[in-house]
Length: 312
Image 1 (spheres, rainbow, N blue to C red):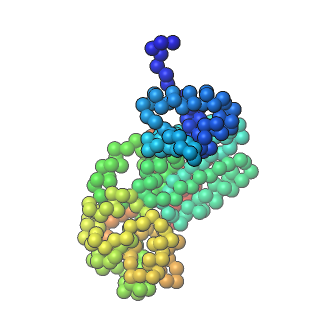
Image 2: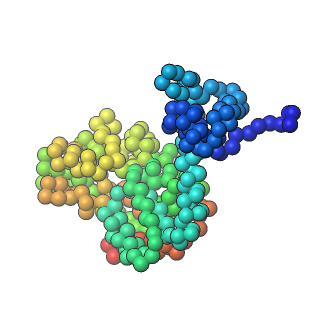
Image 3: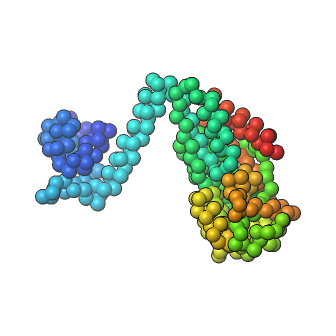
């Protein structure tokens, strides 16, 4: 019909991906059970709609243009998300699977939490996703609905810019427990044999900034006692393995909480309490304001609360 605006359909994205994968319209058409003219027409319709050229014909087959490479990246993402929708709302519902998605910083109690969830679901069908990452990624995961529950630590001396950012988000934060602060050091650090420390003792150490968010990593707006640290001597990582290696092999230091020290300390690494500190760390679980907790997620929260009571 004259004047009718053509709009791209999802199947056309699958056609474009197939042309890329097989490097040939004829081969892609055969795999898709389409005629070659119909596939060619479908490709041209998409190119006309976006006023771009996706492929060039060469002696070695169909090759993506620069615009085509960008277009294909979006195409793959859309197809992947469609497959995720199918898994969630078709396959998983039919199979009656229990889906649990959790994002958390690195905590020693996490294995106990997951084990208890495993015991609860052991006679059922389930998939448990654990995204163990830095604080910023925990927040991002919950904000984007990639996971449903997050576990993280926040401090009364977090940067103001971070506090303002967090308060503006559509997230709910529930406090579970609090912890004082510890300094972890290895035998090559002169602080290793001390029984207690102050912030004055550690302010000139080469600090490992572990498991946090980008705003705090930048170290340009630290609050209170942390503001005295030398931000020009920092190693920033979300890798627990790397942090342990650095503590054991170098004279670095790492500030942490009681929820982490159990899997950091060993015969070569000590956790020394920092006394008379004004910094207080709080453990929170978080969720999106629009998310309603299901039975398994409520079990996770209850277990978290019980674990924190048992370790006070």
